[in-house]
Length: 147
Image 1 (cartoon, rainbow, N blue to C red):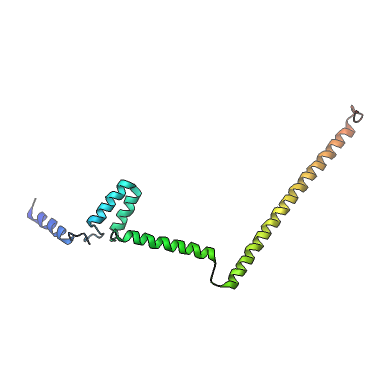
Image 2: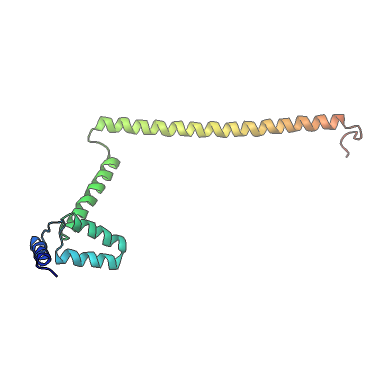
């Protein structure tokens, strides 16, 4: 090993703090982060990759639970806001009226479809009856119904 190579490697090592707070190539490579990454890979490989990405972006592993909790609260707050409506009572009433109107339209479409199915069934039955009657009237070997 040459002295220049040795001095370059010691210079690289000196650019990282031994506490792992930051390295020249980025990331937060503290013992806690590395331990969490290893543990993440042991538990579930995607969790290990997520933890590795978290540390590589320069975040401390201690910040991850707080960040996840904040994101979860944002998602839940957004869902609750969508269910509860707005803070404008008139708009909420309008929205409810529109939902009821849509429900009524869907119900009317369902009723009309059912009526059309019944009409088609009756029309097929009438057509079948006409064909049968025509067949019976033109059949030379049959004189009519036998009792």
